Each structure stands twice: as C-alpha cells, then as structure tokens.
Image (cartoon, rainbow, N blue to C red; front, top):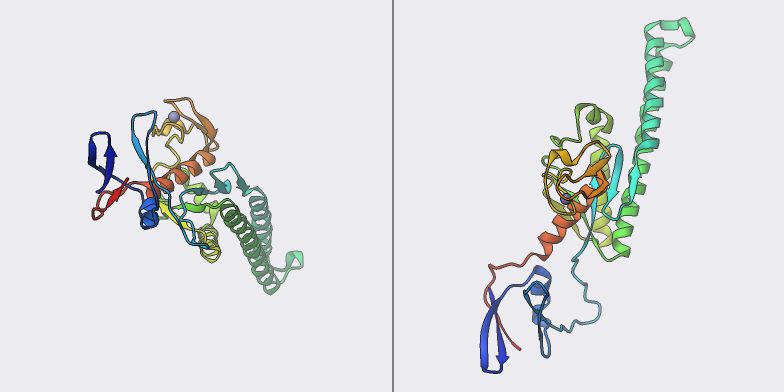
Length: 270
Ligand SMILES: [Zn+2]
C-alpha cells in the first residue's frame, strides 16, 4: 500500500492510499500540488497532475466488450451487432445443394451426373462456403478493431476456456457455428488488434450471459429466450448479446482499473 503525506491545519499526517494500474504507471510523472476531494459516497480521492512527454501512449482504461456467438456472430457493448443471418442462408443453400448432389451420386448416372463431376462440385461448394465466412470474419474483425481504435478503447473478449459448455451453445447451435469459423473470427480480432496497437483483454466467461449488466444479479431466469435479457431482480432489459458484451466490458475495466494493494510503499507530499 502507498502512503500520502498531507498538510493539514494541525500539521502533516501520513495517510495510506491505493492506486489502480493506470495511476501507478503514471505516478512517477506527478508534478506540483495535488487536490484531495471527497466524493458524495464519502470516499476520498487524490487528484494528481502528471506531466507526460509528447507522444506518450495513454494507457487503456476503457474497452469495447465483444460477445461472439451464433445468431449474432459478434455483438459489442455499444449495441452494435453483426448478424449471422446471411451466413446461415448461405449455409442452408449449400447444405441443400450438397444433399441433392449426394443423392444423385447414390443414384449414379440417372440424372446425368457422373460421380467424378459430383465430387468436384462438392469440393467447390465447401470451398465457396469457407471463403464466404472468411470474408465476413475479416470484415467484422476489421470494423471492431477500428471502432475500438477510433474511440481510444481496448477490446475485450471472453476466455475460450469454458465457452464450450455455456448455455447458449447447445448441441444444435454447435453444429451451426462450425468450430473453425468461430475460432477464425476470434483469431482475426486478436491479430488485427495487435497490429493496430489496440489492447486486448481476455476476461472470465463465467455467467456473462446470465449476469445483469445493470445490477449484477446472476440468474438463469434472467434469460427468458435466446435474444432476450430481462433481469428478475431489477427489471433491466436489453438484447441478450448486448447485455453479455456489456458484462465483458465491465470485467475488462475492472481488471485494469482495480486498485493494487501489493506494491512497495511510496510517499507523495501534498
Ligand atoms: Zn438487474
């Protein structure tokens, strides 16, 4: 814990205080006097002016939370959604076409198809589908990184561990999302963020879809349907994926701005 030396009407007093990661990193650049203020809730804050050289990169303190899913491929904490609708239509179209081709193959030359031609057509179809999804993943990841960068924020994603057994990925959905495409989108977001110098924070995925972004109440009943979030405790309603993205954002902010209490002591005169 750090300490601050304050000049009061009855002399100097030493008061312990705590700082977040952002504050600790800039602390050495503190200059001049500090102001001690009391917030409405009774907590005391020390406002410190820092002098940073030009070109200093400001540390990230806020994030764009991103929820990756099936119905909506990506949803951000500002409410932006990238629907998987067009993609699903393409998948169904291709699936139907594939079934017809396979049936034709079973019936041999009856419909004028030769087995070799059918195999070739099937390969073409799966290649088209993969390219289509790849294009979409590039577009989505590009726009997410641009949004974060333009607003001076980092990006927050859920840790993949545990995502598999989340309620919203039921068996039918797992077949739909096709594991590789989901991982590809995540990978694109991560590498585009790194390339753009956008901080990426990975957060604990537990209950992000069941927790209320308004009051923090966690309940399975908060999620009456796939798309809907309605908190049984405070009545807060939102699109379920937006609510999850907001939780992801909060977790990233909490991780970065949480005061650290295990640092060596320092003393600041005020
Ligand atoms: Zn609530």
